[in-house]
Amino acid sequence: MKIDVSIIIPVYNSQNYIERCLKSIIEQTYKNFEVIIIDDGSTDNSSNICNKYCKKDLRFKYFYKKNGGVSSARNYGLKVSKGIFISFIDSDDYLEKDFLKILINNINLDSKIDMSICGYRRVYENKVKDMFCRKFWGKNDVCTSICCVLDSSIFASCVWNKLFKSSIIKKNKLKFDSKYLIGEDLKFCIDYLCYCSNTFYTEKVLYNYLINSSSLMRQNKKSSEFNSKWITEWNSIIYCEKLYYSKFKIEKKVEKSFIEKKLNVSLKLLYLMGKKSYNTDQCTKDLIKFIRNNFLNMLISKKVSINRKFKGMLAYLKYSLGGYK
Image 1 (cartoon, rainbow, N blue to C red):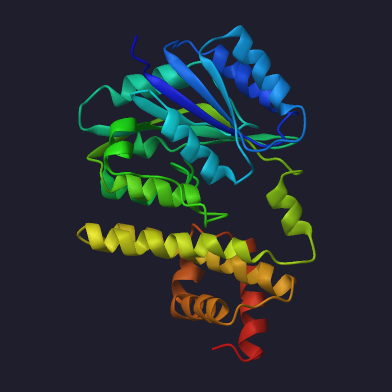
Image 2 (image 1 turned 180 degrees about the horizontal axis):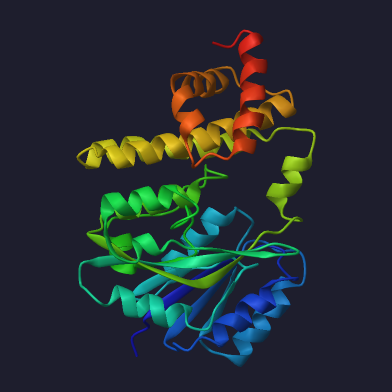
């Protein structure tokens, strides 16, 4: 029987969360799927938990590989996948029971719908926050979709609340770029959208995204050292912007969305650099130049929080006064 959906889950030391994730998949109301678990070199009990599910349910398949990061794990999953559609799920997150059913129903509404997207929930340690936007419910063209993907409060810049067509990924040889520690999801989404006709968005909140204070990223940000790989988030946006300009007729709304995304990331990075007394010469200069050239846009933007503007501007002044122009 043809498999409708391949669910790809990269796993790395996820013993505290992976069971809830896999249980939420078993409880899906839509049943025609395969689960491809890519163990990216875990050293905890993750493998035993995953294999327990594989023994209980033949739709679950376990693969072990040497640690290479989330991008290489997802690419491995794409190679062995057999589904018509592809879903990427993070091992510490979990699904609402109609996640697959609704996303598949929506992508099948029209042959020209190439990506299906849902609202999501940010799950904090002591609260939850639903992220959705009724304004974009229904069918959206590619340029509108790019704007929404750039805005984390709408479609999100991630792959996990979306359903992709395997045929588009394989025909165009799309894959995740391992050189990006941050921004690999955004790059994949924009790469994919370049080959789409339309997307379909439902404001229904179907994906639960765990904001984990013990995650590697959050631990790094609390450390005294700046991780130079964080700059890949900026590089990813620059790549996506150039790709858009090369593929599409320029629309003002997309230009504005790129500016707002770059403002958010440049202010964040500059603040982290300043906090940890770090500079990369050319990148630092690029960030400062961008903020200076878009100073008015930053002040009036509703997409950049007041807190981020304040912290980012303190770092901007620090570096500007220090000789970076």
